[in-house]
Length: 112
Length: 162
Image (tube, rainbow over all chains, first blue to last red; front, side, top):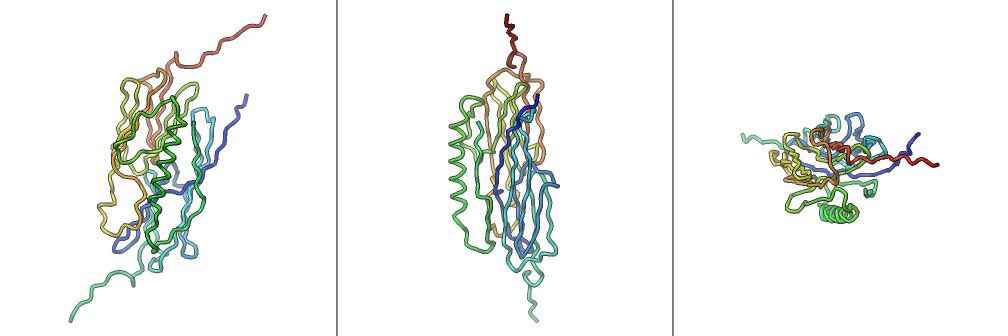
């Protein structure tokens, strides 16, 4: 006998921390339960788009299935070097490091 | 028992814009959701307490014929910082998520993720096999399976029609 699977759909805006350091911006998003392969991050037209689709099966009998769509977009300031973006996923947290362009880094001016 | 939270699917956040009132609204939204959760939760695995803590992780609780399954979202936590105890049929998850941001020097443009102490307790309605409780932590989700003791499982009684 086949059991009917209850299907739900959920759209989630993941909470974010954005920290600006001297050389970079660090963006941290809570996306629990994803595999690295479920997460997509891209930069298009100076907009960083982070998304993940996760199928959450609840219960050992898999009676219910929730499709969780995480998505968030950030428009980037001009000082970001989009060619050196780094992203890592650990313990359910996606950390994107956006480096600042060299010309925007703080410079010490030597007085002669 | 579960209440699906609906959020707008799409949002563009400006980096360099003013700090929006988002944090306040977000907190209010969480509180309202929590009130609904409390209301709909009913008696099954009643939440004993969450007050007096910094944050409260989202938890799904599912019951099937074999077990109670609890899923708690605690992204960013190390498994060593989480403690699970069972006492008098009350299951308690507690821990502390340290704010790793404090180490970093810089401007905080947004801090929406939760930090600090949390504790959630659940009263288990039936008897369970205490020695067979399984807890796993994977990608920020703590999954606990509490297998039911034989006397808590639903019984099938066959009725013969004469």
